[in-house]
Structure formats: structure tokens, C-alpha cells
Image 1 (cartoon, rainbow, N blue to C red):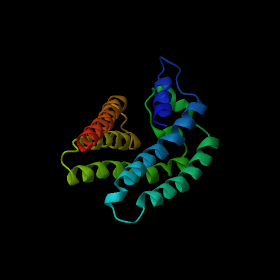
Image 2: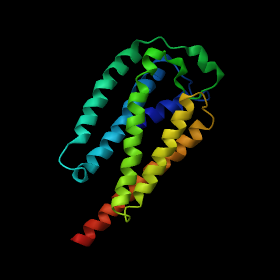
Image 3: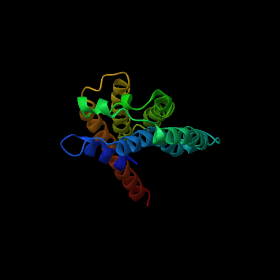
Length: 186
């Protein structure tokens, strides 16, 4: 999903293709569930530390139950394409409010689960420094998304790129950490 969303953002640039209704709809209905799924993944990884309750399964069910109406409404909603003539910033203004209402119910809890889960994991084991990269990357993505949501898309692409690179660096570092731990325990 992250790849598809990033590809759509790239293609949306005026120098490449610019937005069209199908691209914008796909982008809008995939982005919030992707954030929530990243939070779900974080909760799943933390499951052994959170006791016997499968919180990630509850959060996954919640994500699916909110994503279905978002997808259904977003794929048929009228798009205000005239708003894209002012530039290619990724904001939800072109989508009607009856679709936009679903987004915060996925992005806020998903983003918080990702960020707070990474911080919690680092707090339990300070040797897992990769969690700081993940938390910072998530925080950058979360904050730039909120700013865009409230009408300030300035530096959206730059901050989003920085956040994505930090997330990726954190994930790569986690693999190195796991490999090093496995070699040590072998």
C-alpha cells in the first residue's frame, strides 16, 4: 500500500501526470487504512508484551470496519478537480466531507499506535534504538498530515519524504538488530 500511495503521489505531480479522479480516489481510500494497518502491525509486534489480550486483532477489526465505508463512499464520491489547478499538494479538500469524516478515525489511532508503540518498545529495551527512528519518522508523517488536514500543506512532500526515510531506516535497523541477536544467541 505504501508503494502504491507513494507512486500515486509521484504521478500526481504536474510535471509527471497530475491528478485524475481515479488516482485521487485510490490515493484517498488507501492512505488512511495504510496508516491504521501500520499501527495494527505495531500492536501485533508488541502483543507478547501487552499480556494475553490480542489488542491488535481488535484494532484490525476496527480498521476494517471503518475502511469499508471509507472505500465505498470514496470510490463514488464526486471529486472537486478544480482544486488541483492551484498546485499538486496532497490535501483532502477535493473529497466531500461525507468521505473525509472517516480519515481521522483511521489515521489518528493508527499513527498514535505506531509512534507510541515504538517509544514503548524502546523504553522496554534501550538497545533497540531503531525504535527512535520509527517513532520520529511516524511523528513527522503524523504532524505533516495533520497540518495538511487543517489547511497548511506547506513542505508536505519534504516532511513526508524525511518521515518515510526515517521509518525505512528504522525498519532496516530492526532487521540488523534481529540478525545480530540471532547470531549472538546461536
